[in-house]
Image 1 (cartoon, rainbow, N blue to C red):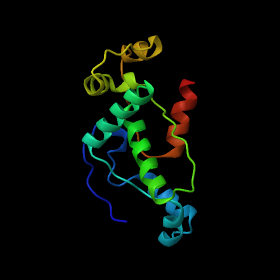
Image 2 (cartoon, one colour):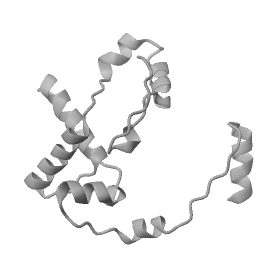
Image 3 (spheres, rainbow, N blue to C red):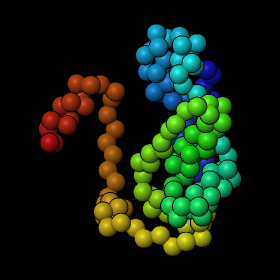
Length: 145
């Protein structure tokens, strides 16, 4: 494993060249890469492959898949090709409207935005800089909630 610079893609939550969760995963396997790699594989796909998968799923099933779901689908298909005796499912965690412009452009459709998602987009984003300290985060949260 070698950390890399992030690369911007249409699946922006996956644009991580040095994921913080990797160290946690490695720790679960006793910091032994050979053990981890027996259970976990990684795959990478281009934006054009992602768009192609989104179109394929939409045409075949009428399902509107977001870019992250499309990458999950492609990863499953790649894994399944190497392991034909396995079954699997793909779960999406975001509504396609979260990627409105990309989904509409890729699928050439107009997408309705759910009311709750629309309400969130109208809220003011707030951020507060604080040190990486559990105690300070805990105090901050307890004072507000």
